[in-house]
Image 1: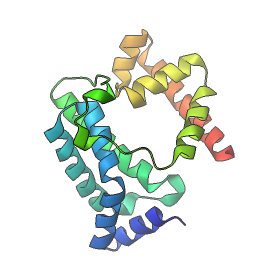
Image 2 (image 1 turned 60 degrees about the vertical axis):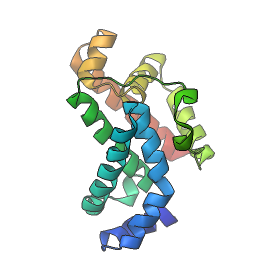
Image 3 (image 1 turned 45 degrees about the horizontal axis):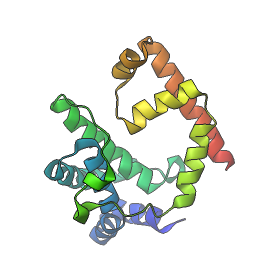
Length: 175
């Protein structure tokens, strides 16, 4: 069992040091995810705070067999940022890394191998499914927004996304 999974299990028992260590390890990356979606420093900082509060409250809902602690934490952060976007009726816009404030540049991903494996799983999808995955998980679009953008029925978007995610999961399990 890896160290981050052990930290999540310690967090379940109320270990504050485990939370501090998780924050030290992934807090900067959570900020990068939030800033990428929100383009607003203060809101991104609030998302980081909200994320770790939710991680503490939801530690019992983390199951190592379903994914890594980072994936669990990033999902919470992404959802929190998207909720803020929806509240202000805005959508994320891709930003040039040169425009990021220099003191908040995300550190390089610590696990390049994981990124390469996930990218490979996405590339093995059909072009059509790749576009849906990118819309949903990288551009932060909701299912109805994807349906409108791609001019597809909502049910089709949902079923194709589910099928694509299952195909990716299967591919990742084989890796």
